[in-house]
Length: 258
Ligand SMILES: Cc1cc2nc3c(=O)[nH]c(=O)nc-3n(C[C@H](O)[C@H](O)[C@H](O)COP(=O)(O)OP(=O)(O)OC[C@H]3O[C@@H](n4cnc5c(N)ncnc54)[C@H](O)[C@@H]3O)c2cc1C
Ligand code: FES
Image (cartoon, rainbow, N blue to C red; front, top):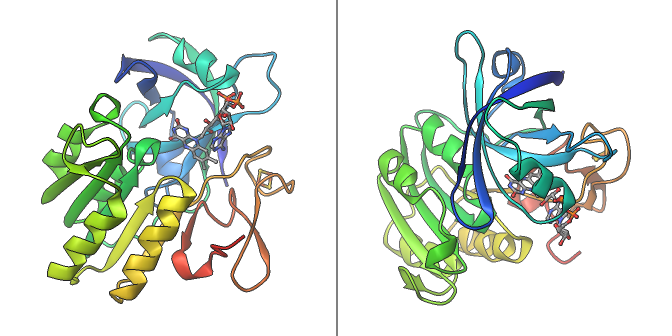
């Protein structure tokens, strides 16, 4: 059961002109509701905004006196702009931890594939597995996030940028292909990013016979499975709630043509 908690902002840093890194003290939320990296929190962004905003947990830890959650988010619209303007010491009304995260085994070996703001949630996967390699894609060099943290936590890190300003010039799925051509001995590919990227990564993983899990994004209302705000079509013709059944799904469950 998710819990509602008044959390204190204990750290806040701008990572780029529109991306914020924020650490929250979250009572015993991690101890009570952690089910795997890739879960998210639903944050009330100001008293005038009725709907909360979903933000993935980038990393979290049980701590004393309070558990800690780190988030990375882009200021895109009203809600996230309000959130980006909070300062250390401010309080936030947070519902969490929500959804099902990635299925990660400490003993496993994972290929983490992130695109843009989909990169931060994979940090938790790197911390939950003994061995992982990362492929991180960004629009350009000035949009990169958490590269040093992934370098510290993964065996290898490859970077791709859309404009070629850093690392490989192109999309992450091309690097996934090159990597799996040389070594397909991964427990799974874990991917988070825009849906077209996830579709391409899932296709390459399938071609090489490596299981793939993807984290989907849908606009959300309640965040707990009580409305139809986040319903998404599945390959078997059913609809699933991204908030409650996901946001992480096995790639073969998803209807990629919807
Ligand atoms: C499970 C989940 C996890 C997420 N994790 C993160 C995260 O870790 N960091 C982060 O920066 N963002 C994340 N998002 C996206 C984030 O929730 C939206 O950017 C935010 O709700 C926008 O609210 P707003 O009021 O600022 O903007 P709005 O004024 O509501 O919209 C501004 C812009 O954001 C787009 N947008 C709104 N909602 C979404 C959405 N759900 N997905 C994609 N685009 C959206 C709109 O189309 C519009 O272009 C996540 C979304 C989901 C569903
Ligand atoms: S947002 Fe209400 S069911 Fe998912």
